[in-house]
Image 1 (tube, rainbow, N blue to C red):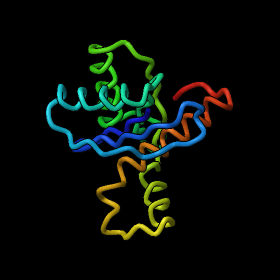
Image 2 (cartoon, one colour):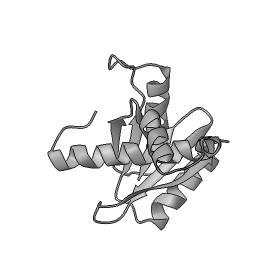
Image 3 (cartoon, one colour):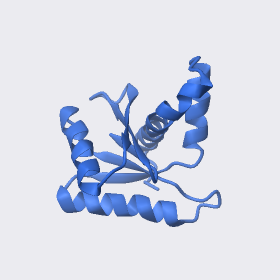
Image 4 (tube, one colour):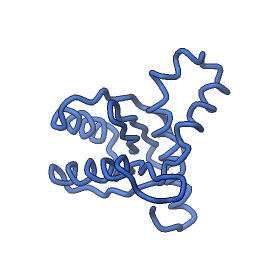
Length: 139
């Protein structure tokens, strides 16, 4: 399962057991961490996930910033609640790619806002699965 953490929302995507199909699952409206974590773990358990990929919003030059630190903090806090495999995936341009995907699918632009974060999580998960298949180390 993959997460695209933002300041107000967390996009969620998952794949099937043989990693051949990635789907946007939902967008979680952030409230309190405990509630957000409960929803993440519920989705994780319902899908019998084996690990979590968290999008890491790096700067275009590859450097970290506040948003990347926030994504790492989310991972650290989730690990305090449950021991599970977590990997990071560079998410630069994932939201742009998600918007392109939605447009190509014929989704009207006014509906993109409600779907973009989950679709970006799907892009993040696809990129991570490709990286794993190619044997490239994590970001």
